[in-house]
Amino acid sequence: MSKGLNDSQFHMWRSIFALVHVDNVVTDEEVQYMAERLKEIPFSQEQHDILVKDSVEPQNVELMFSRITDLHDQALFFKHAHAVVHVDGDYAVEEQQILLKLNELHAKTANVDDLIGSIKLEFEEERVHDFDDAQGRKKYLAAVLFSLKRKIWGE
Image 1 (tube, one colour):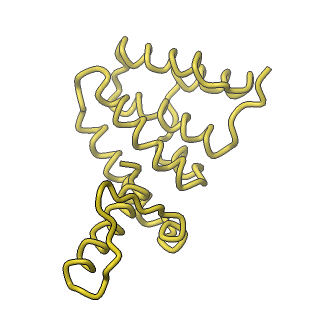
Image 2 (tube, one colour; image 1 turned 60 degrees about the vertical axis):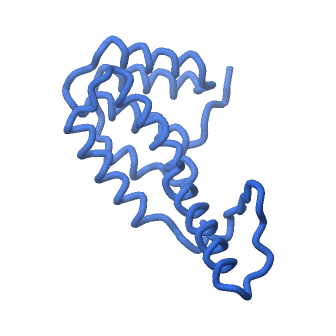
């Protein structure tokens, strides 16, 4: 039997399951999405049982999201949220509103210093070594900002 996910990861999934209920319509595609996650991810038996219950009894998305303590898990939430809100082909207004609100919360709680310290800049073909010229500084700054954006919003 699996030890399961850590608390932050688990609440990321509880947030996803709660998001399914935001528009008060749970489609067959959303049910299938949740069922596939329950099969694929090594939840503990207790975590599995809680998520099964969450799949039929709506939880508060904001509360569940507030319990995601790891910034990476918060970013991962938005990737999965994007998938689940589009799985039924209907991106409801309620889903849009809660995701905007959670994105704002995520941006407010993100520790930018920690993010900057953990960013690994990835340059495709060209590395900027000469920061003395304005063009080099602009390219470097653009790369830093792009990496920071990807780290914060998980894009």
